[in-house]
Image 1 (tube, rainbow, N blue to C red):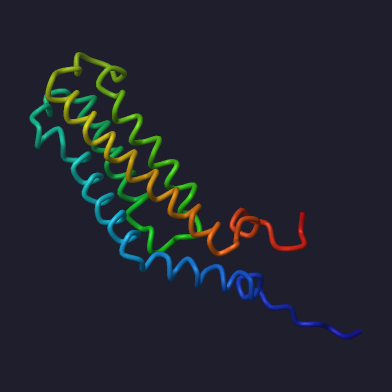
Image 2 (cartoon, rainbow, N blue to C red; image 1 turned 120 degrees about the horizontal axis):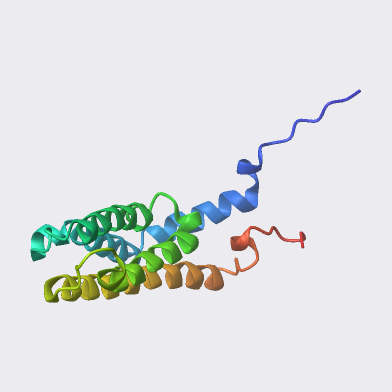
Length: 158
């Protein structure tokens, strides 16, 4: 009985090429700018209750802190995990939208001018940055002809 050695799926030539393309895309000035701005937006979101002065609204302060850290984790590591950029960017966009509505949704009387203004501005910026990251991933895949491959399907597998 002859045994055949099969290379792990991570070493498949198509996957190696896909990773190489994503690594090259992560090094573009646009991707680096989106990542840097996303880190700043997430950092501001996390610290905004203390910066804008609504830290007495504990529920919104905690919400912004958690959302800011989550946002930074999702979009801050784009260069290291570009294969998941598209789904991570959509999750980050959801955090941006949540940030916009949070002053009216979280428990307590937190919808004050400072909290509304701060959350709307950083929420819109965060959403736009996340959408830019998502469109960048989609555009790269379309330009490089990776449409089916980038969505988990290999050529010839339907």
